[in-house]
Length: 261
Ligand code: GLP
Image (tube, rainbow, N blue to C red; front, side):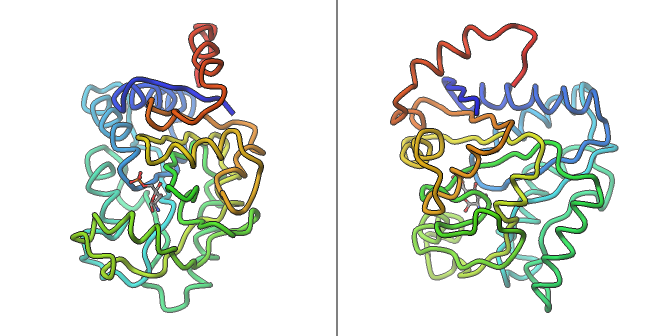
């Protein structure tokens, strides 16, 4: 696990976009895992800028979102399929129909989840997964107690996650759905490169557990310690509880110039 502490979201966006640019250069038909939430927004903005400038293209790429609320009507602005379209997909040049998400309106939810797993596998798997992290250590919507081997399935959101996400629902926690579909921890672990971004002090404890805590279903993101290629991009606030912060800073500064994340 590589930990990179940077001054702000914009610089995190640049470093993550460099990794996506390098991936697209060697594999134009790359498969990207796309997270919603506020943390990756600077990454998406930077990718849009590079696409506008003709530096990168998503013409041959594919995308899969991580998770989705159950039961939000198709026209609801907070449906994650809509959100990812608004913040990223519609702003770049993905071909129509090449970005998919779990179907939170499916009548047969287990079948929809199995189909989603099959669709990811059919592309050859996710090359680069962009991730955020919840204050309780969830990734995707894999709440504490999630099976570390789980696959796409329905989950019940914790009260804390619904409170955290109420800001997207007019600050009314009762409007936040109670259930979601999410890629499992096993699904996320199958991505070839995981780039996790965390911003701000509210994430400091979850980040400390992720990087330095014991692997535990109580902090689901800790499963990433078993992944061979994870990059954790942090601002100073999110990094403030890390015991080895100075070491991570020195390590990043002294990286060979040829070595990306
Ligand atoms: C949400 C999403 C996650 C996201 C996380 C953090 O509940 N399901 O995919 O990473 O919470 O969100 P934010 O980046 O807005 O803090």
